Image 1 (tube, helix red, strand yellow):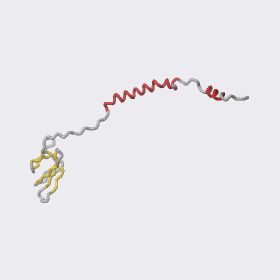
Image 2 (image 1 turned 135 degrees about the horizontal axis):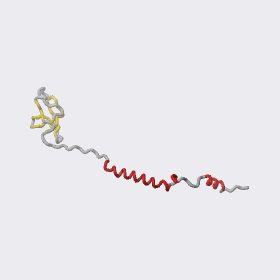
Image 3 (image 1 turned 180 degrees about the horizontal axis):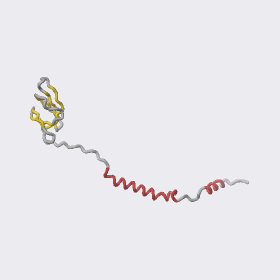
Image 4 (image 1 turned 135 degrees about the vertical axis):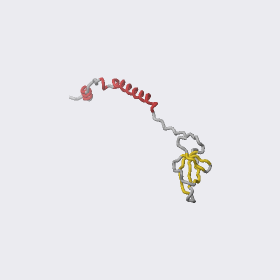
Length: 123
């Protein structure tokens, strides 16, 4: 007796279940995939305005054109005189000679020719 070559294939086909459960079919899962993608799209759409923006640089309001911050106080060649360097609000650097070390680094001053006047941070 000869065996038919197609018979083993038919036997495997009959052994496998002919009908898969409804949750395992592609057409049954498609609506869930579409709903999931729509939900993700809505989340992105709702939160699109909440993306972080780079911080803006603070604008320096120049109230006093002759004002600046003391960046260095050094003794000059004469021990009674000090060289005071002031970073102006416009970015330039001015150096003045003072008879006393009345200013320290970080003080806000106003330059009047060769004289420095201490100012408050609010003014």
